[in-house]
Every structure is written in C-alpha cells, then in structure tokens.
Length: 226
Picture 1 (spheres, rainbow, N blue to C red):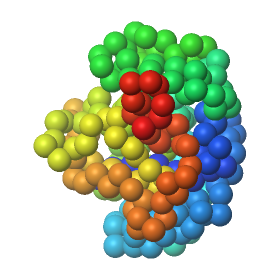
Picture 2: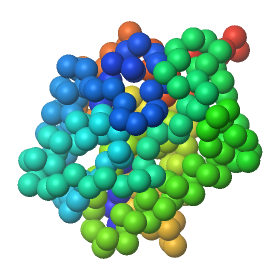
Picture 3: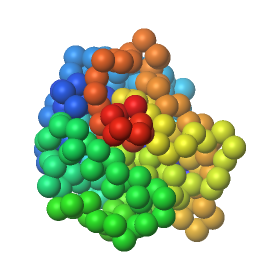
C-alpha cells in the first residue's frame, strides 16, 4: 500500500507556540488554509482511494480541499491524534515545551516506557497509532492520504519505517503540510518513498516566525527550541 502521511496546516496554536493536543483543537490560520489548498494542488497527480484524518479539527480543515477535489469523504480514525501534552496542555512556556520535547526524545532514544506527565507512554502511543494505520491498511486501498500531526508522525515513522539513507533524523522539523510517503504494510514493513519536510505546496508557504513546538522536536543545549 502507498501511504501518504501529511502534517496539518498551520494553526493559531502553532503561531503562539502553545501545546494544543486536546479535542477539538484550534482552527487553521489564513496561512494554514492556503497551505491546505496548495497541498491539494501538489497532490493532483497522486492516485488516492481515501482520505483519513484524526478527530482534531485542524486535520479536517487541511484535508478538505484534497478530498473535495477527488469527491472523497473524510474518514475519522481514532488513534491518529497528536501525542497528548498531558499536564502541559495549551502551555507555551519554556519548561512546558522542553518537557514535552524531552519526553518524545526519550521515546526516540528507545525508552518507550517513559510516560509524558499526565499523558501516555511511548508504548501506548505507538499501540494506538499502529491500530489506526492497520485499520487503514485493512480497508484494502491502493493509496490513501492520512492527515495527522507533527510529533505523532515523526515518532511513528521513525520507529516503524525501515532505515533509509535519505531519511532525516527524527528531530528535524516537520513543517505544516509536510509530506512523508511510505509503501508497504505492517507485515512486510514500511519503506520510504519520499520525505518532504517543508510544505508540499511550496517553501513560500513557510512561516519562520511561528514557534510551533510540535513541529520541531530539536532543542539546543539550553533548552531553547531550535
């Protein structure tokens, strides 16, 4: 199966640097809506049998232009949601963001038993995201678009994808409407076809001024977001 994994467009929380992971989440900005429209154009030549989204409204708003162009419905699948921020939900201060990023980094370093304070462990996150992807694969599509979230996508892909020399490190930024394309399944494994870390509709859709903590899992030595 061909699995197109896209991060949602820019939200107001991305701009303010808030850890917005709970339901329903905030809306896309005007730039986010432009990113979504540009993504639909960029995917015009891609065959798609279905479009899947998480329960968060930003994924619906991002996927809508592509789905409308294809005459497809949006299918919500539980488990595709962002890694829950737990005790630091909607905070944007240094300690909160550093703690969130640090927990995800701990998972990526191999300690999946670590628990996000007030949230899930790495094992629990991967189990629910695996189940969501398996449901999509079991639907029998040849190709599907999945619109999900930055930290969730990088954590799942980096953990489940076969090593590839062109794959960036998991901590590298995954910008709004970035696109990772995989082929395979749970049994044979997932192989990288392409990894576009910037907006698939074009770099002109970037917003370098946005804090966007779940879009950048890197931090420098003093804890500032890099």
